[in-house]
Image (cartoon, rainbow, N blue to C red; front, side, top):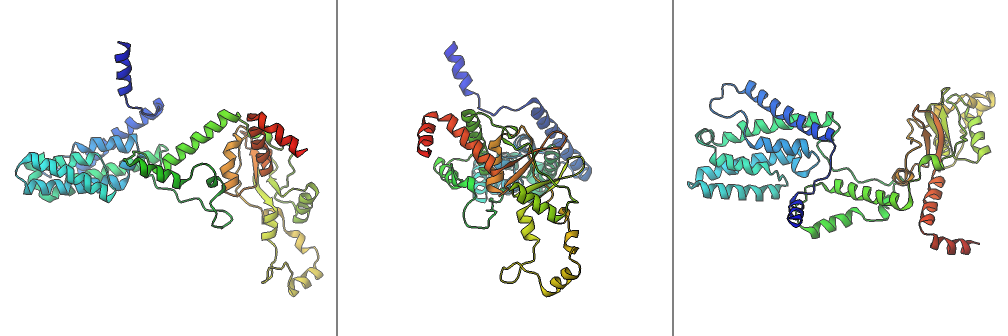
Length: 400
């Protein structure tokens, strides 16, 4: 008996766990989607005769659009292209083949092949093709108009409901493939995090060898695998948080601080950035050496200079340049992190986005510290050595 129960348990699909709130969101979405589609169709086509207001495949489409909105099978082109292709093929088979069994078989087979070819695979569309063949006199009488009404109308209304509901409830839809990360230094090299571990090309090669339709987008699969790597890193090295490594005694300036005083502050502390805070210690910007360089007057050959007119103006009014303040050159808005953020999450931000300094703010959005790339490198190095003490001793001995 235990062996039998074990076999039955293995037959259950390995669906990822979801919260009760997500289950409720899915059910409410399906309710709203089908109800909206039916009501809108009834209002628009109340005198259309014997044609149904809703066709059965819309129920299956609702499962995909609201329960798995990130699935490649649930994207707008999948449902629009799949349903229209299947309806047209099903109608053609019904008109030219007298035997319903043969017509149904060919309609579904041809629909699947065409959807795969056009990259609009949508499982409920198989039922659309079957409905076009076996739908009865009303469907047959509609002819190719069946592809527009009710199939086309039902499809567009349900899709509109999915677009609105999913985005309003925090689910990105449609699930567009993100653009590849660009190197912030504008070179041909991939971003730093793409040079270690697996790459997108590795994932594409693995999927090609797998050679099956996978009901998850490539970018989602890539994100899940990288998240798994991050989880494994936390398990191996422990969770080092921003509060553990940040500098707490932070030199700051206000938006009204003069550029001369700001530059002096950078030089005195031998640092390259200063958070800009207001009177309540809220971070309103950050000023860096790069901001100073970008605001300088550069000549056509790359030399820093003042033209004759500016030299004369400075000679007459030598303090005019001191009127500029931090607010004139600072970078805003600022990307920041919380004290409890794991430092591993900073790697993509600092390595790929090219950020060198990240202010740390508390729950009240007050500045409590700052993290630099040097802090991050030290934290990751410490984590690696603590995980492999046997490798740390030779390295330290060699350094001495």
